Length: 224
Image 1 (cartoon, rainbow, N blue to C red):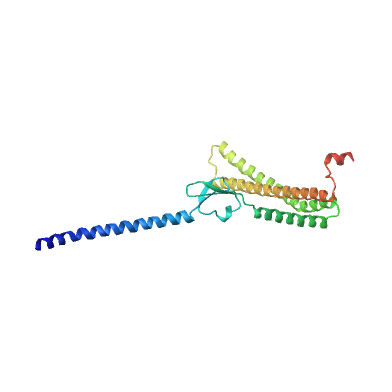
Image 2 (tube, rainbow, N blue to C red):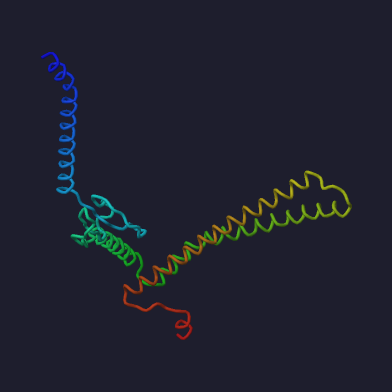
């Protein structure tokens, strides 16, 4: 009797270990089945391309790419739907651009009564710019003359095989810097003049188109 009791007691730990393993395996299997069921029930893959043509995958398409063609696939990667959505915001941009152009056209027609007035307005806008450019060119001539004088002084020292004094070198460098800055301002002023001419040229061309008139070219005006 004591022998049987000892055998039963010695087997008890093995029994509990076996039961624990069975329960653990059962719970893990159930968890895997639940996850698989959820994935199959709600999972999907969306494929789209960004503005650089790079292909992306995800469970949903970002809002900024909602107007692009995209593909809906299942978990096996099989295409189930091809989407070619409209691009309403593109139409909105075009509409806003048209409204802005209409506004400019009304202002153009309301400001000028003929194309010659556009030329006169252009010239009035150019006058101060041209005067500023002329003054800058005069300043540059003066600055360049100072550069030449400083440079001549430095050359004379070199010919005499004497070191160029520090004040001469500093003066030469300062005069060169002044010329460089003036050249930069001249370039900016020239760009402003070109922009004015271009703007009024476009306005005149648009004005004549709105009036149903042909643009006057140099050749046509010479023949008149």
